[in-house]
Length: 171
Image (cartoon, rainbow, N blue to C red; front, side):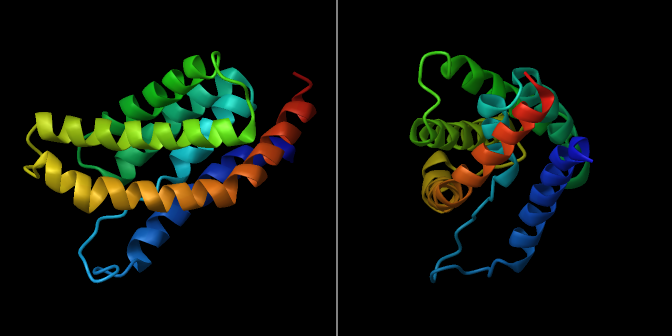
């Protein structure tokens, strides 16, 4: 039964992201901000840091593929970006301690890297014509604030869940 908890957690975050996007009012705080919840990326980063190391990259690959199939018209952007960000975080955490505060800060960096990477890829293939300054004010900053709040709320439960996972696998 325990082996199904991790995939169920990612399915829950996958569904939560889409529900949040559907229920979010169009004009938040009087402006047309674009807030992108990155619950999956945060969960993947915490899995990469606190879970078995290979699980983070493997799950990033499969979740990225699923994300591309369901949400995007182009297969490969999230398939590439999720594992890349997880790999960067894995290498970055060899420098830092795995303190929950530091991991939360690194998770925030990972979310910001994902946002910048996805914007740049869409800009390079001409799927968006939004200027970078507009992207920063309408999407990047609101997304950063929202995901920071999510990280603060979810960091401890995610860490505890992944610690139990590692203990059950005897790694």
